[in-house]
Structures are given as C-alpha cells and as structure tokens.
Image (cartoon, rainbow, N blue to C red):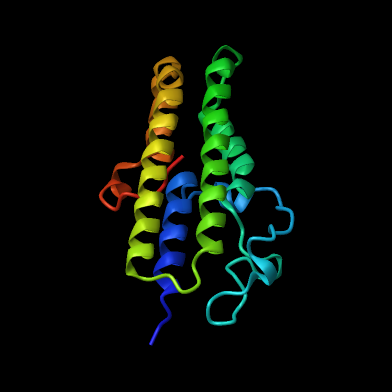
Length: 173
C-alpha cells in the first residue's frame, strides 16, 4: 500500500511543472545550487534519491533563470521589447518564488496528513496556479502585442501550446 505522501508529491510536481513548463529550457538551465533545507538529503518517500539525485529535490526557482533566458533567446526579444520582456521575466520570478514557498510549506506539513489536509493542499496549489497564471497573463499581454507575427508564432508554441492545453499543465511559461 502506498503512503499518503504520494498524492502530495504529485500535486507539488504538477504545480511546479505548471508554473515553469516542460521545455528544452530545462536542459539548458544553468546548474542549480544545492537544494534548500526543505528537502534534506533529497530522499523520496520510498528512500530513493529525489529526481535530481544527490542535490536533493530541485525547486522551481532553481529553473526560472534558465527558462527566462531560453524564452528570451527563442522569442528573439528586440531592444524595443526589452521593457515589456522585463515585466514578463519579473512575473516568472515572482511565480517561481511563490511556488517554492508553497512547496516548502506543503513538504513541512505532509507527515500524517489526512484526506482533508490533502484536499486543502491541492486547493492551495490550484489557487496559487490561478494567481500565477493571472500574473503572467497581465505581464505577457503588452509584450505579446509588440511581437512580430513570427515571434507570436514562437510564443504560441513555447508558452501555452494547444496540444497540451487539455491537460491543464503542459508547457507553461
């Protein structure tokens, strides 16, 4: 029988993927510093190492700079678009920080969590996801309107591609 922590890890993982997205940016991200004290030893619920080995569980904030650099390069942001891009980058950083805090809190309270606690945690992640999406949309609108048709096409492919929309969490900026 699986422990009750599995759904909490799944919710946290889905929320982190939703906030930052699965893209080539992960492969291009700069090496991250060691994980925080929130994930001592990087141990998973079954005693195996976390999904990033010896450094422990990686947090979304550790990927955000790589994601920002990747999107800026792929969108070919011009000097005239720099001010709007900086707003998008700031929103992405704020989203990653908020998600890092939510994951840390969830990890600290996961032991002995009952059904009500798990549902409450899932609701908190859903609320944070909605807040993060709204923040990103607000920052992205001015930039998107300044993009060339080619840049918009790239943004459509990288930020919220249609093929992943029905899952609700694929490829988020």
